[in-house]
Image (cartoon, rainbow, N blue to C red; front, side, top):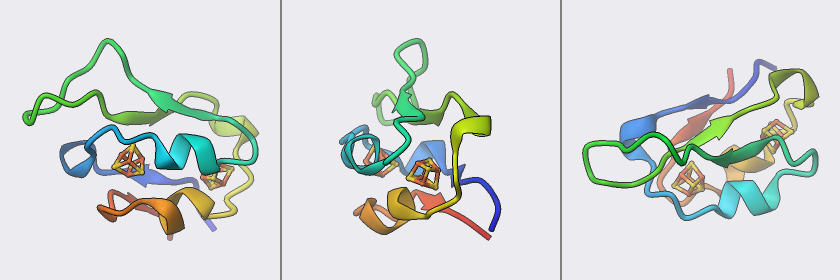
Length: 67
Ligand code: SF4
Ligand code: SF4
């Protein structure tokens, strides 16, 4: 599996994925706003990600996909 791809425009910054990630490699991008005014989540340490897909499973807005 690939690393998660985040659809920044679909994200509402709820942080469910941040809480679900067992490797703690997701965070909200505090310096970025999407067009709805939310700080979108970002994968800040791709090397630490184990492609477990927990983040994609947790996201209520299907903003994260893994291939
Ligand atoms: S795939 Fe797993 S390890 Fe990678 S960011 Fe998502 S929850 Fe974290
Ligand atoms: S769970 Fe989805 S909507 Fe919530 S912060 Fe993560 S990517 Fe954004």
